Length: 463
Image (cartoon, rainbow, N blue to C red; front, top):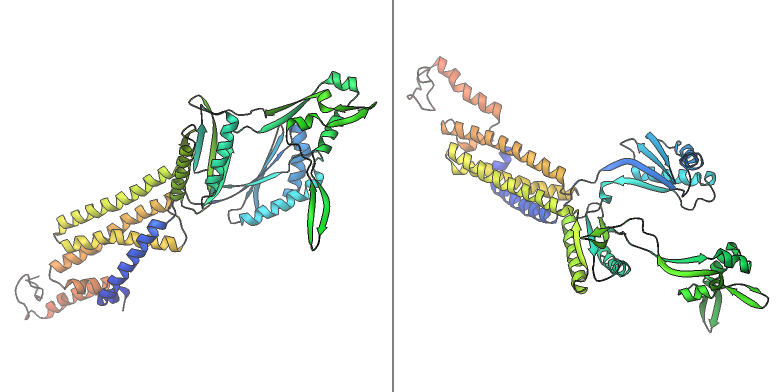
């Protein structure tokens, strides 16, 4: 017995099963993570090495070539390209599509570590290894600006908001862009250095020696043992000014005698403005597979609470909000399902004239979509643009097939050739044979003729 015949014989069981699947599909649709694009693994890894102040030709010789010599030992590499510019070396490695990117990253780290001995000893920053992933692109950018507070205070407020957003479940990282970092600048006077016979090395060494926190051993009190720490880090500018460089003829030479200590900020390399006001940006990145709509809504709630707590003195704006596009695409899918349901039911009702036939085809649209959502949730697949396009495409194919089948059953049933139950259960070939057999018997005998238009008629004249 085929699955079709079994389903028709046990239609109550099938109906209950459909209701269960529909409820499971609706629950899955509500909880299904939404995202703009699927998380596609790109087999490309970039190794960038900064070396400030080095010319491109020296960069290639000192950094790029030693790294390339080690990275050439990697397997499953399709291509490797390098670019040496002023102060930075960039090596792009493309692997074969079927390679395990996590394993490839580990192999690259091992090769880069092996090349450390061949790199310059004064290389202050280690090579940075990055993979390209769509999930690392920010889902939104929050711009903060204010006409009432300065950029330093705005940074402190932005850092508090950054900490609150990072507490949201599903957030991978929140980057603060455009901020200014505090910097203690020590400007030495060459004439005073020469007058006191102090070198820059002495000045630097004295400051570094005093800005240390040292362990002071342990103190035992009965059965308890305490670790002693001697804090020596600078807490303010005055402590730096009073640092003694050396003693000369019974007098102490201090930092303030040969230099000026300034509490300032680092020189800005980039500038950001919103309506003419200085601004900072928070770039929000979520973990792969998390629901963007839920995360975006919670982030907006946090930002609104933050602005209310600050009395409106800090203005904010959200750019690049991916959740808006996702909402529009999901609404389009829902509209297509509803529109297709109404149009198919109306067309079938108009041409076939049977409400039951129209409902059969129309009901297949939402039921199939709900079952699809349950399957997507079971396979841990997110609802993204590729899945939405596939569902819309499959929806059109489903409607076409359903119309052909129902119309064929309706046509044969209206001709009185068999009951709708028999026509739905019979396979196509066996149904064709059964329809042809009475015609062949009519060639041998025409005694059973009961008049034109009857299904029992078998003579050639009636046919």
